Image (cartoon, rainbow, N blue to C red; front, side, top):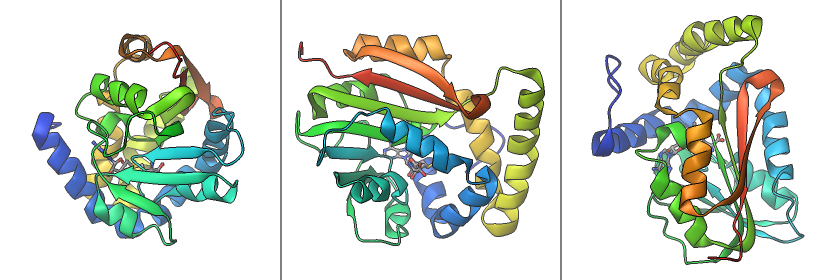
Length: 232
Ligand SMILES: C[S@@+](CC[C@H](N)C(=O)[O-])C[C@H]1O[C@@H](n2cnc3c(N)ncnc32)[C@H](O)[C@@H]1O
């Protein structure tokens, strides 16, 4: 992954896949250290926001090493993970249902799942509107969607701590244990994310209903939720 400028289009897609294949073996270790396990609470609240009926069929999009797949199965649901990086899924460390594929053209049948969740991947996508269109296509009418990603806290002191952590601590820990250029890219990739109101409008334009954003854990994460209405 080049560190001087951020790639776009097909170049970005190829670079993202290569980067995650490279960091996959130590992804979980670095992730837990970097987030002080705060991600566990964020993941729990993300799943709760789906209001799932028992034994729901749920897609974990950009599943990586399958944290949401595992949590969903543990709660009695049937989860399927989809990710561009074979390496990430191969390092899941448990037997789950995984499919290699791109979120912008999902290898999933129309209206076949009850809900979809996606963790920390929006900024890695080449474009957001085709992803939201795919969500409308694959989720059954009445289904729920929850997308969680990083966010910069609004409160000043929190923001300073966040900037220091992401720009200094993350590349340092990532460099020690994994691949420094990848972990220098991750904080920079946040600039790919459009402002919240723009993302919500893209979700509306794609046909997702009642899109809503809330910040979690003092603003270090943002949770975007929406409904797949019966109208389409
Ligand atoms: C930061 S990781 C998050 C992994 C996992 N969701 C989690 O919460 O730990 C981002 C993941 O998005 C995947 N990804 C990026 N672009 C993708 C795309 N276009 N289609 C499918 N997966 C993609 C990467 O391969 C990587 O596994």
